[in-house]
Image (cartoon, rainbow, N blue to C red; front, side):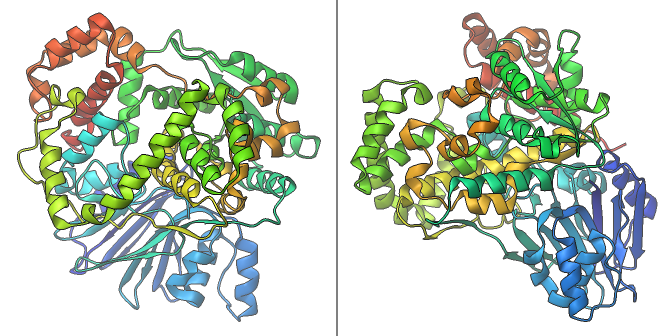
Length: 628
């Protein structure tokens, strides 16, 4: 784990090196081994942790955050090609791969990584991220310089113009609780490097090369033993052997599968694993399932107490580390959980995020799945799904069928209107419509947009490749849309939660090799018999406690927005909404105070008021705060 900061100016570096070092130190939590930097007439490249790697002639410099899992394989290949440089570290292997393959080296790297590479001979700045973007990287193109950093806070420290808010992004977060972390941030001129992408940066031109794409390609030779083998391999590759590792254990099958893998006899002595769980107030109690996993695996386990938690103070710290507002309270509780792991001596955290996205774990995928079964003529599978999905979907049988019919009508309408939506006239209409905010939840708390606000150009959204799919394209399209929407967001949130406490994030289900295999099964197996994540359930059956394996309902992320907004934060929100400073941002309606009191009386729209609180606190602490 490292933090990266790079400043490039074709006209020459202007700011003092001390300013760059101060911005680099804002990433100190991302590396435990100090800081290192390289300064050239047009470039500053600094890292926390492992130092930048410089070629023998000094023309190529590499800063790397993460791990190259196929380092030995690449080193062997480079030696066979006659490369004589140093290959003793991940950074050195990246440098050697670039010397041999140029920008195409990115597609040869396996693992989780973000990198910045400066080629002084070509005056080329290349940045890139691993296929699923597990390691973060952001860039900002200013009037005088280009800045690249692992976290937004370092960009804000070096250029005040980078602080311009993207009000459309803010409105999307308050409205839907979802944003596009694949291409955008809450700052209109700061962009994430998209997952699976290399970007060549220059003030005059930004060239994007997507070396990896979302792909589903059916392989009917695969069996459950193949997915089991990949699960074990991904967990082993993701879990460090030389440090204490915390497992974020919930009652679901994802983290329980990881626990089952790591506590098998063959792996038990190789890694120091301790599981931690959290039970937030006013939320579903998963302790019966968690306790079953602990009994089944024998894993060491601790429940994290919350009685002494200072919520406003802890939320303020969370905002400082995240740089962007969070949208639901579950993120906060996971932040607290990571803090307790660090206090217990853990230096890495294993999470089960990603399994829902690659194995079909969400209720809203069910209509697409049932529709795909019907379209393929698999009527007996349709009947088994409808009979078995009641517990998972928690709705009556007729509602399951009706939802599928609604989905079909929606798909037909989308196909007819698709060409129209891509026209300039429709795009202009959407911009005007966004400004009017017809949604009732928003019209009374947010001020309308009164102009089109400029934003830096965003990379194009990731394409889906369904050319290799053997049936079920409707389902796979819905699954990959879910993947694209969720994965980048989950990675961003979990990376900040972990690194805030100097803990490395480990995500077995986001291993690119596992993802490739998981998306290669025939479509009718993903939710077979009305079970979510049926492939994972069957492959991991003996790893799971019987109680966990038999539990089919979808567990929500622990946390209650309403409890925080109406019980814990009520005094702070009343003071905030009644203060003059609340309206300085220009985001909020003057009716917010009276509306909050009305919702407080009936405990309604707790999610909305939690987001209002988090966005306003973010504005005060990050967006308008002076740099120290």
